[in-house]
Length: 127
Image 1 (cartoon, rainbow, N blue to C red):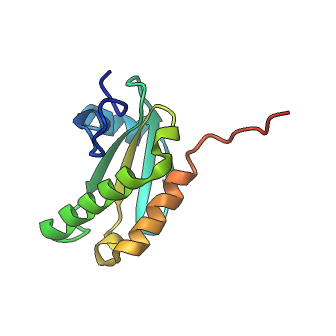
Image 2 (cartoon, helix red, strand yellow; image 1 turned 135 degrees about the vertical axis):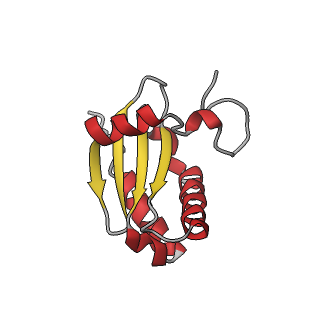
């Protein structure tokens, strides 16, 4: 099965990331969003059957070294997030704001986990 349940590796598979420009544009144009101080999280349902993540950062965030470091950190935060398997099938696009370039790892982690936790489906208590 292609996707997050294949094998025992903890790494993010290429199938777990948003790769195509059309998918990014679909998230921006038709998806919903959640705002934070350091990032905007866009999300839209997908046909893949599992959640996928993509990360964007403009040059306003910082030089290439800063942008790529932030992208690696966000990917790692998402990879280690225990509840990511509970997400419904959707594409997630994390768009970094310029303020993220000066933020430390812990504040980025707290912000991203807050944005992601709001996407978990609320379960009704069993009667």
